[in-house]
Image (cartoon, rainbow, N blue to C red; front, side):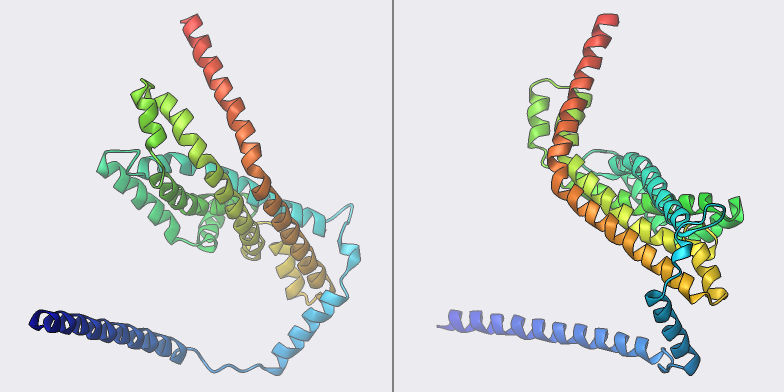
Length: 296
C-alpha cells in the first residue's frame, strides 16, 4: 500500500510540475506577444489611404488592355516573361550549386564532421540574408537589372534548398545501400543505383516548390530595380496610372495561378516521369562504364 501511495504521489508531483511548466511557457509567450503589439503604432486609415485603395480597385476592374502588348515598347507580356525567366534561371542555378553542399552536409554521406559542420554553416549564413537584401547588394555590385535579380534569387535559394536537401539525404533508408555494398558495388554504383532513386522525387518536388516562391519574389525584386514586372509596377504607382497598375496585378495573378496549376500537375505525374528518366539515366551510366572498359 505504501508503495502504491508513493507511486501515485510521484506521478501527481510530476503532473503538477508539467502543468506549472506549461503555464510558465504560456505566460512567457503571451508576454512576448503583448510586448510586440505594444510597439506597433495605432492602426488608422487616413483619407488619402482610402482613396488610393479605391483607385487600385478601380484599376483592377478597369484595366488598361492596351498595355498587354506594345510592339515597340515595354508591355505586360515582356515584363511577365522577364519575371518568369529570372525565377527559372535563379532556381536552376540554386538547384545545381546546392547539391554538393547537401551531400557534404549530410552526416550519413560525409563521415568527416568538420566538413559537414562547415557545409551547414555556409548554408545557414546564406539563409540569413533575404532576397531583397541580396538584390540591393548585387544592384550595387553589378548594376540594376535582371542579372542582379537572378543572382539574388539564385544565391538565396542555395541556402534554402541546401538545408532541405540535407534533411532528405539524412533521412534515407540505407538498407538498399548496404545490400549493394554487400554484393561488391563501389561507391559510384551505390550512389547511382541506391541513393539517387530515393532522393530524386523529393528533390524535384522541392525544386518546383522553390520555383513557385522565386516567381513571387522576382515580382517583388523589380520594385527595387532588380528587373521583372515589379519595375513597371512601381513606375505606374508613382505616376498614379491606376488602370495600368490594375492590368499588371491581373497579369501577376494569372501568371502565378497558371504556374501553380502546372506545378500541381507535374507533382502528380512526376513519379512515373522520373522513373523513366532514371531508367534512361541508369542505362546511360552502364553504357559509359562498358565503353570505358572497352577503351581502357
